[in-house]
Image (tube, rainbow, N blue to C red; front, side, top):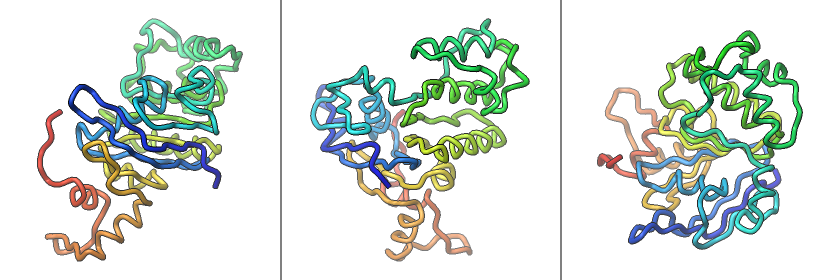
Amino acid sequence: MTDMITVRDLKKRYGDKQAVNGISFTVKKGEIFGILGPNGAGKTTTLEMMETLRPIDEGVVEIDGINVAKHPQKIKYLIGVQPQTPAFQDKTRLTEVIEMFAAAYGEKVDPMEFLRDVDLEDKAKSFVEDLSGGQKQRLSITTALVHGPKVFFLDEPTTGLDPQARRHLWDLIKKVRDKGISVVMTTHYMDEAEILCDRIAVMDNGQIIAIDSPQNLIKALLKRGFKKKQHVEQANLEDVFIDLTGKGLRDE
């Protein structure tokens, strides 16, 4: 598969803290790429630099061959961003939300088509304030895709959702990937990363300490002699994460 994103020696410092310290990786076209790490590992800062939301101190990010730092306006048309907490006007109808987001990119779309894609067609005339948390996340996904981006960024997309809403969102993210869109996401849920992601980068202290498919990361852990304390000696991605980053609690 073709590389859609290339990150080379990316760095970001806040005062004395090196938040991101020379990381490099690629994301392929039509791939779900997960970034995992403890609190303060540098995940969100990395995402924000890729999204043009935060200046890059050193290094290069290219999306579809375009330098993010040099051409931020071009990049904004290539990417869709779903924030961790969607912010919509409560008294706006869903069809109006879609139309407003499309207009911001100079697009005119059929709102029903986009609402249908995220199973919100029956809520078309409802106000945002009438939606559940899961429904707002689905609306947020479709507004990020109205302009046909090549890359879709999600930061902790299922935080606060119940199990049913989480799994529904997983299906939507897979549908986005199946359209050939590259998906880059952060998550604290190991089961989510294991099920969704084609490849994963594990970050700690601003560096990438492992990068591979979930299956290969688990196999590597087992080869190192890992055994669970439970009767069933089977590792999962959460075991890999703890092994790589340690058991100590991190500050928020």
